[in-house]
Length: 154
Image 1 (cartoon, rainbow, N blue to C red):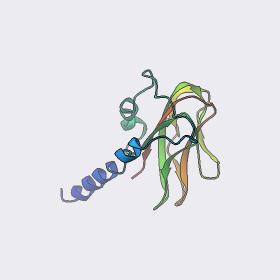
Image 2 (image 1 turned 45 degrees about the vertical axis):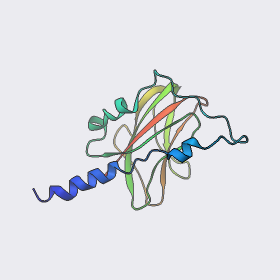
Image 3 (image 1 turned 90 degrees about the vertical axis):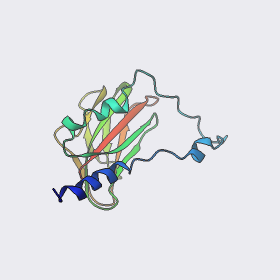
């Protein structure tokens, strides 16, 4: 039973890594030379909570590492700062897209077979990158709002 204590603390610490933007950043006035802000996600887009609920079946033993969304790609999902890392990624989009996971050099790590509005990337198991690399989400469509949820191996 004593061996579970450090494991439980590790799981709690991993959940703390997901951060919300600061209030100061959200309240900053828009810069006129910056691109227009992205429109909010439509109400019909799958929620992060619904995506996360699939975690036990598609990413057993993994912890949630990132929740990202946007309409302009590529999106940094997980950075392998301290060690090699392996991930599974779910996506949900407002229109059918070909979604890919790529590394820092643009090498395709995983992709869906046909355009879809949602799916799991790394369908046969996690995709891995070496220490110092990054896993990015990328789609083939512009103007499509996409939500990404990544799970990382402990």
